[in-house]
Image (cartoon, rainbow, N blue to C red; front, side):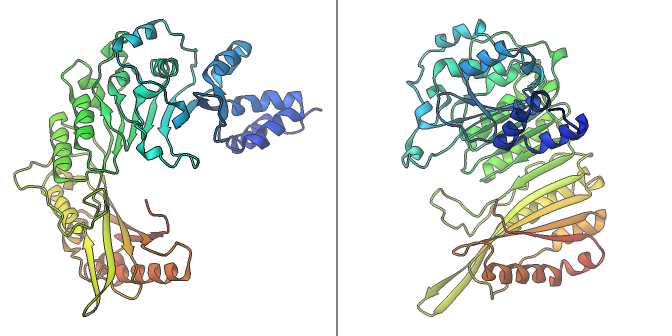
Length: 449
């Protein structure tokens, strides 16, 4: 059956179906001509399975051996694969490898030629049938040996531009030195390893591309993991100058004063004069048990803030807790906010060369509350923020992210509270004038991040 649609239109249709594999496969099997058009979309995203278990169904699922066999049977498929994704489950774990000698055969381990592969993602998750997954050590060295070698071999491909690692412990950052063109590094909630593996020699400096984006977000106060990452970024090797020379986006989520100071020290050491975006975050949780903190330390006066003359966007994620408790003398209300520390950060940035270029400030206010009839923002001092905005003709985006303590988004309760919060921002004494002048944009979201 001949197709009557133009190839470019078919390409767009199959592009929409890339994450609907069932529909995409049905289209591909409808006719031979459609199959040839759909094939490169079908194999664009690969979910690599350590075992023969079922995948998530959002990408073409194969095991390591199946992928190699497929590349032999269809050599043209090497130009189709653009991203590879893997999840580690308890059944994928194996006996930990104790010796670095076990990596010796990585030098001769075959790596498939994938010239279009640009993105690698690896993460772990808790399956529903494994309630004790949180007690399992999700360590990279616990993954089956041949699979680790194969995965690490993919990082040597010169086409790799983005690596994402989530909820995997003990991942050796030394492997990333062999990503010749790595531009975006995303690390989420993981413990890093300083293990140096006896792998092949790193590429020469002239063949490296600089990092453009580094994101490190951790759900706990993980100063050790942060120090490992910063040490890797600033290590005294020939790669350092190239690695951070053009860093454009730096995103961290410091959970303590020590972490924040480490980030500032890193920014000063690397002289990140070309940085265009800096994102930081404070959270009201001061312990894994979720206890509320009533004190948010400000950066010490002796800490030197970096001079970033090209920084034009500053994103800060602030949290506000507002809850009610029934006490002996009636209902007691309180709010706990990280905005005092955020205000201090803004004042410090304003006192540096940053003020010359800073034009956009994003403040994401995550409000955790169970009291819709009480003011949340009225007692919070936005004056320092208003001063920075007015003096620099900068714009402020206030994103209200509501997370009721006991109620789910989408309920009438949620709608009433969100309307109350938006009204408060619009009528706040420090923000009212800025809103009228067009400096403030108010958005709302039901999704807690």
